[in-house]
Length: 318
Image 1 (cartoon, rainbow, N blue to C red):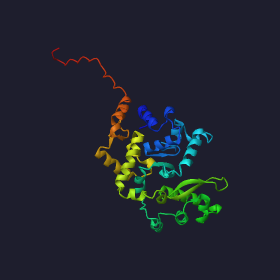
Image 2 (cartoon, rainbow, N blue to C red):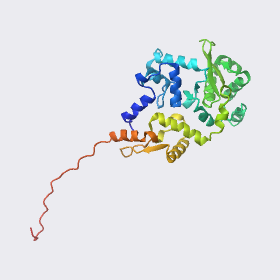
Image 3 (spheres, one colour):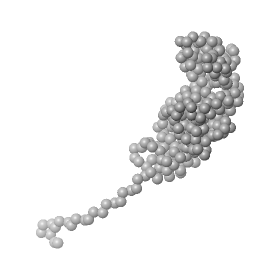
């Protein structure tokens, strides 16, 4: 649809805490918020519809372009840094390779989709099959052999400390985070800015995670994540339901169809012909239908034309 009804947008603002009276005021509020929505971006991202921590702290839908002197930006950054060593959530560059927060109850489903099996040596198979870059392999091995390392030391231990290797190092770090192999777990006073993330292996930081994920089939993992995504979106165009997650369209369609058949999700036909069908949760189906019906233009009154007199037939009776 070109635009969503106001009622759906109001529900999003409520769930995403984009209202002043609902804004997050403390780190504990942020922890509850991530648990409620299941997963959230750290900052808003153009073209990606999803809750994010910055707007929930600000209490409105402000863009990131407000500037780094914005108090909400400062609080989001500080709260994130303070939480890194507390295991409140998963934090790393995961969805669309953007900084993402994932609740611990939903993290096993994401891990089940990652292709990891919990064996620290699995990375070698991925490297041999061409699914892991040489730089990512070097970084992973440095953490595997040395334990947690700040970014400055990590570059040295992975032999990527040269200035010309910085871009490759940064790209490989994102690669490892997006595949749930590495995550930041603290901040160290290192480097020119006296600020550097400390990185560790995901399975070392969350040792029970591989076991928790092992019992979740891929199909169930996708459905759990997609169901939560649709829930906090309130309603979403079926064609683009998984675009924010970065999944293959075929995988999204398969998961959607299974959830529709089971009744977890419902299709809501829009009032105008030719518009995409929206998907929503069964619980919100009535609300979304009512919001769409309120947008339906009133039916045109039937025209009342005066009947014309019939012409007489030649030679016929009048």
